[in-house]
Length: 133
Image (cartoon, rainbow, N blue to C red):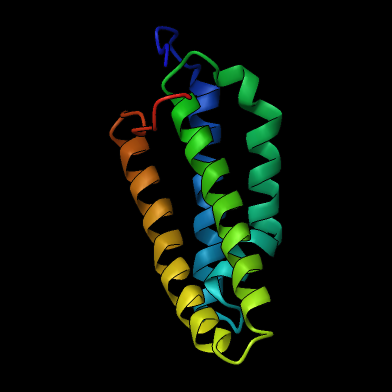
């Protein structure tokens, strides 16, 4: 990934704001009656965050912030994919324990993704991303 361009201060603040939106969704789920995974993909803060990711992605292309945008977008879509897989599994008797376990594991994974990403952003570091195919 070419990260020669320096991101603007506004894009850096926006990336912090997007992590804050995701963190707020997770935190509100912990304090409220929602689950972390559903709050991460279906709450207004997270939906606003993913829209901001896509809307501003071209502004961070070629900077180290691009890796954070990819990290956030992938976190959202992988969480949604696991929700769908677990929901389909619920319709089978053996799938109910799988779905419960999947929701628990994905919840921990979501917290990890938000904390690790925001931590590296605060340190001014890009996220390690898999090589492009």
